[in-house]
Image (cartoon, rainbow, N blue to C red; front, top):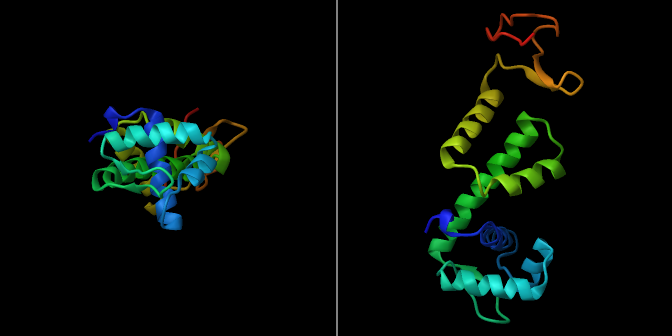
Length: 163
């Protein structure tokens, strides 16, 4: 099943079940409600819908488990979330809370090919010995730490700085 067949809310439930299962070994409806900050009745409805799609195993008053298909879909959603979170914090320098908020929003809409480019760019910024750019809040732009702020050309990485 593709994530295109799920609502953003259903994706959030799958992702929450995925993380709870990974962290605590199981996902109880009460913990899902607490983590997602929703009412128990909302959780019950969502779990029934996900069970109908064969993404979870659900029985009232029991722990919820992901099916193989559910684990695959939830894993893809979690990878998107973590990649976006990393990009926002490490590359763009956003604070954790703001990065988390936008990762949650964007994970539902970003196509895989664009996410792949963001991930590769983030990897490049971490591994390239010449990449020393940093976000400068006052100028609302990047600058290269290898050169001063007034430099028009960075000799280390050969990238032109915007004027």
